[in-house]
Image: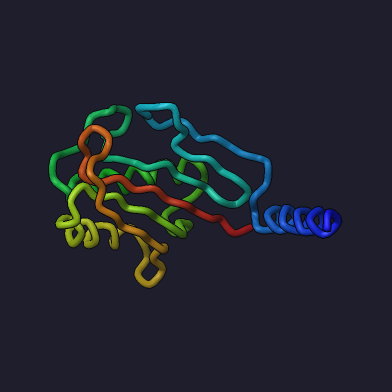
Length: 148
Protein backbone atom coordinates (compact mmCIF):
# COMPACT_ATOMS: atom_id res chain seq x y z
CA UNK A 1 0.00 0.00 0.00
CA UNK A 2 2.83 2.41 0.84
CA UNK A 3 4.43 1.71 -2.53
CA UNK A 4 1.14 2.50 -4.26
CA UNK A 5 0.82 5.80 -2.37
CA UNK A 6 4.41 6.76 -3.24
CA UNK A 7 3.91 5.93 -6.91
CA UNK A 8 0.62 7.82 -6.99
CA UNK A 9 2.24 10.85 -5.32
CA UNK A 10 5.16 10.82 -7.79
CA UNK A 11 2.79 10.53 -10.76
CA UNK A 12 0.66 13.38 -9.42
CA UNK A 13 3.68 15.67 -8.91
CA UNK A 14 5.04 14.79 -12.36
CA UNK A 15 1.64 15.64 -13.84
CA UNK A 16 1.65 19.04 -12.14
CA UNK A 17 5.10 19.75 -13.55
CA UNK A 18 3.98 18.80 -17.05
CA UNK A 19 0.98 21.16 -16.98
CA UNK A 20 3.03 24.14 -15.88
CA UNK A 21 3.03 24.05 -12.07
CA UNK A 22 6.74 24.38 -11.44
CA UNK A 23 8.60 25.58 -8.40
CA UNK A 24 9.98 28.56 -10.30
CA UNK A 25 7.96 31.66 -9.47
CA UNK A 26 8.29 35.25 -10.59
CA UNK A 27 6.65 38.00 -8.55
CA UNK A 28 5.44 41.20 -10.23
CA UNK A 29 4.95 43.98 -7.71
CA UNK A 30 5.17 47.29 -9.58
CA UNK A 31 1.52 48.18 -8.95
CA UNK A 32 0.41 50.18 -5.90
CA UNK A 33 -0.94 47.78 -3.25
CA UNK A 34 -2.76 48.34 0.03
CA UNK A 35 -1.72 45.18 1.85
CA UNK A 36 0.70 42.28 2.06
CA UNK A 37 0.10 40.72 -1.36
CA UNK A 38 1.67 40.63 -4.80
CA UNK A 39 -0.25 42.01 -7.80
CA UNK A 40 0.79 39.02 -9.94
CA UNK A 41 2.75 35.78 -9.65
CA UNK A 42 3.96 33.75 -12.63
CA UNK A 43 4.15 29.99 -12.11
CA UNK A 44 5.20 28.08 -15.21
CA UNK A 45 3.15 29.45 -18.12
CA UNK A 46 0.43 30.78 -15.85
CA UNK A 47 0.12 34.30 -14.46
CA UNK A 48 -2.15 34.78 -11.44
CA UNK A 49 -3.34 38.38 -11.08
CA UNK A 50 -4.57 39.45 -7.66
CA UNK A 51 -7.90 41.19 -7.30
CA UNK A 52 -7.80 44.67 -8.78
CA UNK A 53 -10.04 47.55 -7.80
CA UNK A 54 -10.39 50.86 -9.65
CA UNK A 55 -7.32 52.62 -8.28
CA UNK A 56 -5.94 55.35 -10.49
CA UNK A 57 -2.43 54.28 -11.60
CA UNK A 58 0.19 54.89 -8.92
CA UNK A 59 -2.36 55.83 -6.25
CA UNK A 60 -4.81 54.27 -3.83
CA UNK A 61 -7.56 56.65 -4.96
CA UNK A 62 -10.60 55.23 -6.75
CA UNK A 63 -11.04 56.42 -10.33
CA UNK A 64 -14.72 57.29 -9.91
CA UNK A 65 -17.96 56.55 -8.13
CA UNK A 66 -19.94 54.79 -10.87
CA UNK A 67 -19.68 51.20 -12.07
CA UNK A 68 -18.79 52.16 -15.64
CA UNK A 69 -15.73 54.23 -14.72
CA UNK A 70 -14.63 51.68 -12.13
CA UNK A 71 -15.03 48.73 -14.50
CA UNK A 72 -12.87 50.43 -17.15
CA UNK A 73 -10.21 51.30 -14.57
CA UNK A 74 -10.16 47.79 -13.07
CA UNK A 75 -9.73 46.19 -16.50
CA UNK A 76 -7.09 48.76 -17.46
CA UNK A 77 -5.25 47.87 -14.25
CA UNK A 78 -5.44 44.15 -15.06
CA UNK A 79 -4.23 44.90 -18.61
CA UNK A 80 -1.27 46.89 -17.25
CA UNK A 81 -0.21 44.12 -14.86
CA UNK A 82 -0.48 41.56 -17.66
CA UNK A 83 1.68 43.73 -19.95
CA UNK A 84 4.28 44.17 -17.21
CA UNK A 85 4.65 40.38 -17.14
CA UNK A 86 4.66 39.97 -20.94
CA UNK A 87 1.02 38.87 -21.28
CA UNK A 88 -2.04 40.51 -22.79
CA UNK A 89 -5.81 40.22 -22.49
CA UNK A 90 -5.89 37.46 -25.13
CA UNK A 91 -3.90 35.27 -22.69
CA UNK A 92 -6.55 35.53 -19.94
CA UNK A 93 -8.30 32.20 -19.40
CA UNK A 94 -10.30 32.90 -16.25
CA UNK A 95 -11.67 35.88 -14.33
CA UNK A 96 -13.58 36.26 -11.10
CA UNK A 97 -15.67 39.41 -10.80
CA UNK A 98 -16.80 40.66 -7.40
CA UNK A 99 -19.63 43.20 -7.51
CA UNK A 100 -20.85 45.24 -4.58
CA UNK A 101 -24.30 45.32 -6.21
CA UNK A 102 -25.49 42.66 -8.67
CA UNK A 103 -27.77 45.31 -10.19
CA UNK A 104 -24.55 46.65 -11.80
CA UNK A 105 -24.05 43.37 -13.69
CA UNK A 106 -25.44 44.53 -17.05
CA UNK A 107 -23.37 47.72 -17.14
CA UNK A 108 -20.24 45.84 -16.04
CA UNK A 109 -20.86 43.07 -18.56
CA UNK A 110 -21.16 45.48 -21.50
CA UNK A 111 -17.79 47.06 -20.68
CA UNK A 112 -16.10 43.76 -19.72
CA UNK A 113 -16.91 42.27 -23.12
CA UNK A 114 -15.04 45.03 -24.96
CA UNK A 115 -11.71 44.01 -23.38
CA UNK A 116 -11.67 40.55 -24.97
CA UNK A 117 -11.92 39.27 -28.54
CA UNK A 118 -15.47 38.26 -29.40
CA UNK A 119 -15.90 34.52 -29.13
CA UNK A 120 -12.62 34.18 -27.17
CA UNK A 121 -13.86 35.27 -23.76
CA UNK A 122 -12.23 33.75 -20.67
CA UNK A 123 -14.25 31.66 -18.26
CA UNK A 124 -15.80 33.83 -15.58
CA UNK A 125 -17.50 33.72 -12.23
CA UNK A 126 -19.39 36.77 -10.98
CA UNK A 127 -20.57 37.12 -7.40
CA UNK A 128 -22.09 39.83 -5.26
CA UNK A 129 -20.18 40.66 -2.09
CA UNK A 130 -21.06 42.70 0.98
CA UNK A 131 -18.05 45.01 0.71
CA UNK A 132 -14.82 45.63 -1.19
CA UNK A 133 -11.58 47.48 -0.34
CA UNK A 134 -11.96 51.27 -0.16
CA UNK A 135 -15.70 50.86 -0.86
CA UNK A 136 -15.04 49.97 -4.49
CA UNK A 137 -17.97 48.78 -6.58
CA UNK A 138 -16.00 46.07 -8.43
CA UNK A 139 -12.92 43.88 -8.08
CA UNK A 140 -11.57 41.45 -10.68
CA UNK A 141 -9.00 38.67 -10.42
CA UNK A 142 -7.54 36.99 -13.50
CA UNK A 143 -5.53 33.96 -14.56
CA UNK A 144 -3.58 34.10 -17.82
CA UNK A 145 -1.73 31.36 -19.66
CA UNK A 146 0.89 31.89 -22.33
CA UNK A 147 1.44 29.05 -24.75
CA UNK A 148 5.03 28.00 -25.28
